[in-house]
Image (cartoon, rainbow, N blue to C red; front, side, top):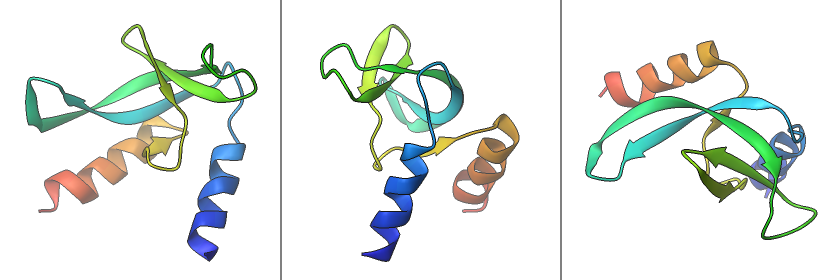
Length: 85
């Protein structure tokens, strides 16, 4: 329970207009992931919710996404999860 509350609080820190960094998997090569810049926007499909705008597509901003406030933070996580294997 505590973890989900922490994640909910983490998602609440973002506002429309913020630039964040996410891991993006190539849809054609699922074993390849890159760090990609995305914009936090108001979700056009669900007013009152936020979404990530990435590659001309809206993705709901949920706790299921690994979202980082800075590129440095994203690179550190990437190295931990993908290069440390």
